[in-house]
Length: 340
Image (cartoon, rainbow, N blue to C red; front, side, top):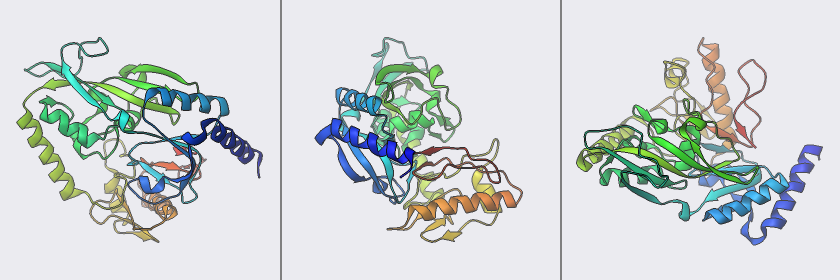
């Protein structure tokens, strides 16, 4: 065993002792993702309130155990060997949605988009599912979040990656996010400016847990918002595949579409073992039932290689890779977005 592996093993043992029955060993987390493939976390804990999360953060800060925050798993690919660390999930206690007019619970007047009918706010728990939130806000006549009906993730994950679609993203309406830093056990509010949103990214890292978010929205017409939800859902069903996938595999190059390059390189329908590039949308990879995460990972690498060989850009994964070797630019040094 290497010194690094020994340190992780020691940290896991210490964390397991401190967490006691709160933590479960060898909990399958691959099946919790939308790929539904991959292995287990050495330790797993589900927290249902801030006090419990604070306790977990204290253990993480004291032991240095590697962590992985698991939301709805819609942007994760977990290696077949699993994750050598502590996986943390938010329970139903973090799934609340509240909304109103005028001054928000943070004491700040809403500052987001303004319609003729005025401003409104929403407080959303970090574990809340985006499609559920979108429908609830639409029925209440709050506009500006309809795009999220087609994003199968959690609010916490949406904040961390600045999720978006259909011409908008979270940066357009977020006022602040409540965040716990697992490395320091610090809990505080991050403003939109501090989050430094960019295209599918923010200043948050793998050790940050988003427990809630405040949104600034428009007071509008419920019928109009619900009709827009129906249009978005219909478009996604017509243009994107169902089944076992994690949405867009690669981020779009500036001013372009990753799927166009994948298709131009002849990769549409390309299969490697139990994984296949979707024949419906080239920037999706489908995993077979009972398939292997390693096949998805190798297919991602092969697609990137073929696109570069065809004269295209080096496509960068939007998917967060858990337990895999670090992503390296095609033909270049190692770097990249890998958890664990």
